[in-house]
Length: 224
Ligand code: SF4
Image (cartoon, rainbow, N blue to C red; front, side, top):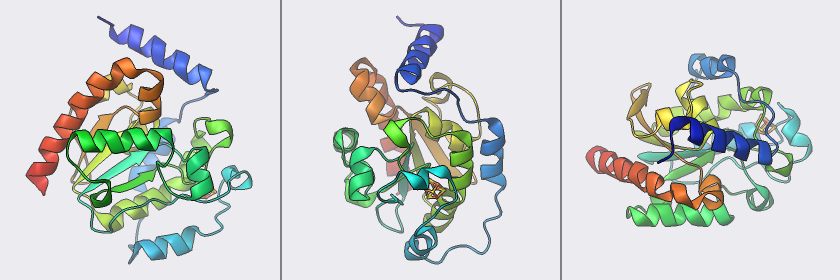
């Protein structure tokens, strides 16, 4: 059985392989929770209008489309991933590539339809080469995520991957310490699991992801 340190070493190896040099700093997480969100947005269309042509961070230079998110404005459950990938950048929709297909399968495994949940990412533009978003990019983009959460007011959030978990929960703890628990931000319950792209690369973690999804499903049924 793998220890926490084995798992951490494996994850660091994975991050290195995909070109990650730095992880987001706590400062960005803290600011996320302290952001002044007033006045609240009236609709997703209003947020879409605001984000149009955004140049707040350097990711605007290489993106094709901004990927704000997709799903009902009154969704009970929100999924938050890391950043759009190549397919998402081309289509302007979240989770449409291979990782998106796996997310659909993960939802199917717990009998949740994609159409009933809201899906978005921490940053809304694709980082070049799918690298991990940098702290300044996350910080620049967080107000949009904060507005989405404030407008939709999901009762439950599922974060996908390390960056989303650490950003939403304002922590620097590793994923292995955050999984399997029910967290809470601003009265919203939060469950943490792996990013589908990570599961495609390391399928042996799918069993753990299924445990996370079962926890998510139980909470979702209770909150609906
Ligand atoms: S990632 Fe976010 S902050 Fe950066 S340019 Fe895109 S929308 Fe703007």
